[in-house]
Image (cartoon, rainbow, N blue to C red; front, side, top):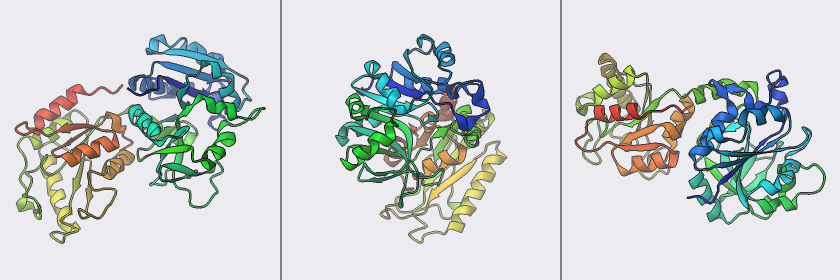
Length: 398
């Protein structure tokens, strides 16, 4: 198990960008998908095995204390450190030092990212750094970059977002040593502004880079996406060849519709997913395009017929993502790389930690692991309809 048993959540700011919502309540208590946002964060933390949380509070602190109490109703032990509203992050952390473990997970109260604590911890320990931050790769231009990462370490951290060649965004999830707080200057410093430049210069600020989008309540513009994300409409991701259709021999491809053979139970599975209100997303490697065995147009015609036959049987395929590159091109989308899964995540605001990916070979499992999905092997002899029933029956939105 990871060597982290405590999360520390900075939740003291006034949240001025969310006014007038924050005129009467603190930002963590803004409701998203029917619950205060902080509840979603605590549920995620508990799911990763953390049992103790320190809340660092300021603005309307008593409302948060009253809501959370000692944490027992969340299955957690929650302590509260309250300092003046005007305190910066450095002063809040220093004031709470006696509550903090020697190493802890630091979070901000307005960002949600599907935490995988074991992977984060392993990356942190392997880096040998004093601190590690999670960085969204921002390949979709979701927001403005504020870091540049080189060889697993932050080379530039620029909160003003004006430095050249930035690529990536600090998303407010970090692992650090408590003794770093001893380096903070006196007064009321910002933790990031005071400490990060020093750590960067010493190559002591590692980066865990992720392609999974984070979601925020930091501004009004972000609220609708975060609402969609945390509403968690169920979705499944399916490999194509070997799951929906009979796989061709190695280095051969389904080039035209007459080559297509549905696997037993595949159409029925699509019908069952549709009847249960699930989104169905297909991801598929199609190196035949790079090798000249078929064209993009050939593939589009096959997928048009595939979707039409599924629809005629009462099923639905919501999106198809394909990798047209060759085996050795080093792209980010060809499985076992997780690129297509992240494309689907961003397009549909999926929480991949709650999505099953059904595949039939080792590369599918590796892609699922890299993206944070649950991998469900398409076992020999088990029709996809039975796999679909199992996935649907096991689904739990919270």
